[in-house]
Length: 423
Image 1 (cartoon, one colour):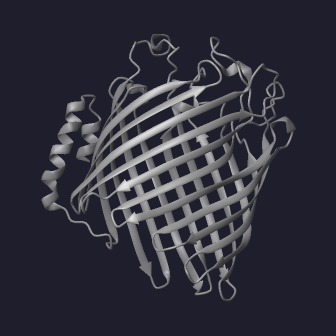
Image 2 (image 1 turned 60 degrees about the vertical axis):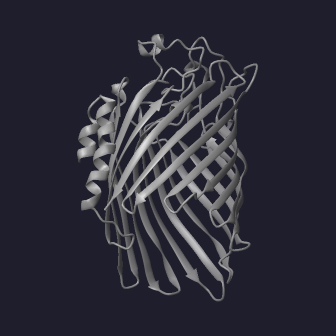
Image 3 (image 1 turned 120 degrees about the vertical axis):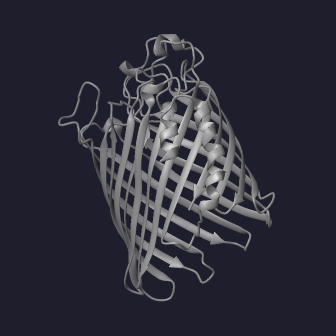
């Protein structure tokens, strides 16, 4: 609670005091990964040079009433985790309260309440599965709003999901898998890029588990979606009320050696809307992840992924000085490289580089050009764990996005220091 109270103040130097007080409390704390209950308290002080991911062409005074794009943000959190085994049943719970305080743009302040809960159930050793639920509250990603009239709104997004999975072990390594789920996304304010929606899905398939721990899976998912706050289709903008999704995928988890593993997925996603086929999309989705530990103290992860996601817009939603565009969905291709060097038992150096290309497709109005964005993101972090219950991290991140259309590019630099206490 001390961290939460400190973060409510708008003076960054008070947050720095939290980093001094945390080590002083260590002598009263103890932590054990095998405990049924664990509590974590953390505080992060961050500087962000471009909070709203504004294009250099935008005069911040026009949108924000002041020339500054930057801010100092204090994020404090308290989290509780529970892990309990009863006979063959295991129960997990992770809940947190996250207090976010902005020094300049204090209208963005909010307290997020998040949790995940799971029951790993067993009826017999051959019939088992998991019942899980989750709730998350975060600010909408301002990078997705760059160039739009709502680009500086305080818009909280709430994600809720509930899922039931089951596995039936036939014989040998063969498994029949199935599940049902419901995912709900809500926004505190209207957003035209990703409307409030709910998707109910059922899926099933077959998996083979190899003695080495590797596995090969095929499954198919059918989903029924709705924009539940829209009672009728909006013909003027081709905004629908319902949609169907069908996805096939093959997944491979392959432990090549003790130091190398591959996680790969190849699939096809198809989405059809009830009234406006102009919004339909389909295509290849998948990912390829390679994890390699060349030495005992170094790890390297390389990944590539392709995703298709909803992004429905119309020309009226852009700021007037920018080029207009229209889209129904985004095709995203991402390449990532993440090396980790465990310098000592208590110190680690992490780096990450992402190269992302996003193509905005499915235009429903005729315009001279489609929008395509390219983003470079680099991160370097130093982690230090002087004691089992105390860890600290310093992070520096740089992002640059360029766009084929005017007004959707941005640059941002962020640096943060985090202290975390577990007991």
